[in-house]
Every structure is written in C-alpha cells, then in structure tokens.
Length: 481
Image (tube, rainbow, N blue to C red; front, top):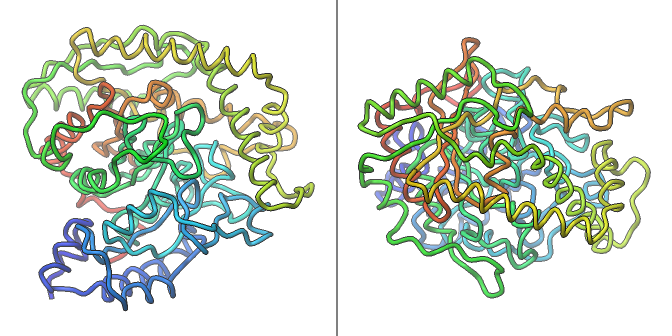
C-alpha cells in the first residue's frame, strides 16, 4: 500500500481513496489512532466524535472531491446537529449544550466528502489569539510544547501541524486562521467577506469581520476546499463576486509579474516588529523578486491611523455581549459566577455599556477606514506583503487575563493581531504562508493581502512560492509518524 496518503495532504488522501489504495474506514481509523497518540501532549481535540465517524464511513459517503478524508471542526460558529457545541466556555460545557442543526458550512463540508472526527479547542468565544480556555485547558504548539499555537483556531492548527489530520476547519475575526497558521507552520487563508456563508444562524459576525475556511498543509488543499464551500445562501447580507474560474485552476496558472508592496513595520505605532519577523518579510520580498515580481516598500497610508484599535474593540465588545445574551436565551439558564472567564466578564461588562449611537459611530468609522485602505490596490498594486504576526509565537500563559489585570490578555495580543485585524475590517482576502522559521525553530509566517474578491491571485502567487520554497516536508518534533 502506498504511503502517499500518510505523508501527503488531503488531496493525496482523496486521490488514494479514488484509486482504491486505501478505504475511508482505513483513513478514519488511522487518524483516530494518531489523535489518541498525540492529543495527550497537545490537547488539540477536546470533543471527539469517533463513534459517529465510524458509523458514517460504514455507510455511503457523498461523492465529493474529498470523499473519506478525516476532518476536524473548530468548536466555534460552525456546528453539527446533535453534537456538543461549547465554544470553549464552561457555561456551555457544564450544561452539555448540543447544536440542534447543521450550519450551511457543515453541510458543505459533508457534501465535499469529509468525515468529521471531532471538535478542536478554542479560547472562550474566540476573541483571544491564544488557545487556553479554562474549560478545556491550553492547546500546545507541536513545534514547542511550551508555546501557544495561536488562536482562536489553535486546536485546529495544532492538529494539522502534528499530522493528526491533514486539514481542519477554522474561522477568522481578527487573525484567527492566519495567526495559528503562522505559529504552527501551515497555510491559512481568510477569504473575502461574503465568500462563505455564516448561515443560517448568522448573517455576519463582528460587523462583517468574521470569515470561515480551513487550515491546511498545502496551498492546493486550501484552494480546492474553498471551491467546495464558497457560495451565497438565501438571505446572506454580503456576497463576494463569483470567481472567473475555480480557485484550484487559478492556483495552477503562474502569475504574471506582479506589483507587490512590502510593509515590515506597524505604521500605527501600536507595537514594534521582532527582528526575525522583519527578516522573514525581507527574505520573502527577495524571493518574490527572484521569481520576476516587482517589489517595493509601499503600503496603504490609512494603516497609520491609530483609531482602528478603539473602534474595532467597540465592535468586538458589543458583539460578544450580544452573542452571550443569545446563548443565555438558548440555554434558558442564567450563568453562575464561575461560568465565564475573566476576559469574557470584562468584555461583557464593557459591551453592555456601549450605546447604539457609539456602535454606529464605530461602524461608520470602520467602513470609511476600509475604503481608504482598499483604495491602495486601485492605485496599481496587486498584493501587499507583511509579517503575519509582529513576533514569534508566545509562551503558554502570556496571553491570559488575571484578576489584577483583566485587560492583560488583550494588551498582550496587540503584537499578534496588528497586521491581521485591518483586513478583517476591510473584508479583503489575506493568507499566512509558512516560509520561515526562527533561530529557535518556531515557525514565522508572512502575510499576503489582495484586493477584495481576489483569492485567485493569492492562491496563484502562494502556489508559486510553495514550489520555490517547499514547506510541507518540514515537520514539528511532536507529530505522527
């Protein structure tokens, strides 16, 4: 039997199933064994659904392009009927809350042929870029168990990076796909606003900042999966423009000489950039030049505006307060004193004090900011290259609130989100590429951003970089063999 399905990506696994080299049952059992072996060290999968997965592969599977490929869902936003859905919160965990229906995205993952093996760990309700919920404990980075895999898709990232599975679901409201991808050496793309439906439960989240997709080992998996899950559903408030061709086909077309701006500092002055993260951007720029692209130090001047943090914070706090109120109504039971974490209580208290007028003022400011940023691409640039994070992955425990410092987690988050948040606000597609590692062996991603609706350009350029500087063969110390 070929080992391609063991060493390769999700596309390889699906091809092996189609060729009869391996059965879906064998893939699922092998993935379950890997999870059981590695999860005690990493704590990536917090809600296993192994028996349901076994039952699923014993019956007929949809004839999608990823038929029989093992998959993990992040335990946030996307949920499946009858399964636990806790969002990293003790409030929901203690009450054993279960979802009553599939989201549209869950339906599309199933139609693509994926077999869900379980749910991955998340910070409580997702606003912190490190995965350390009190409800389930911290997820650890397979490159260094002392370090965080980022967040909020940290459980998914640790699972894929360690090769428990080849692909896992993630979502991104301020960097929550790109940050874990950077921290664990994966490819992670945040699609354009409206590319993937949040229905039927949500029209948008965080005033349109949240996007759904996956974390992958390869560019081709990300492109092919977006082909499976993209598309509007009835009532969606925003619909991204349909692509001219399948994303996986666009990926295979070598890009013509692109004009690429380079940004290696934080223009707003929120934080400084670690020397190794700055060096990663500079090396990526050199690589792009060697591939025939025009590279220059340039960026949207609107990124210099320091008010972004304040206005985005207003939206997040108010949105979280509304979301938790919805959970309390759904559960039908008020929370106890110990049901929510320190940072959640702080956000709830602040969010409940935000008036409708203040929310609208921030909403209008952010829309104006988005226009100022996006206009830079109309000036003749194709892509913007930045660090994904302003520093290497943090240690476990660094991005955590305390009773004495309830804002500590958010303040410590600034270097992690400084380059990602702006493009949640603008709704533009952005991806983290695992091109570099620090002197201590930790992954350092670089981010590329395209104009709204131009995921095709990111996939084409990322695939070119992946071929020029392959990363999939580089594996962390804690991994499946």
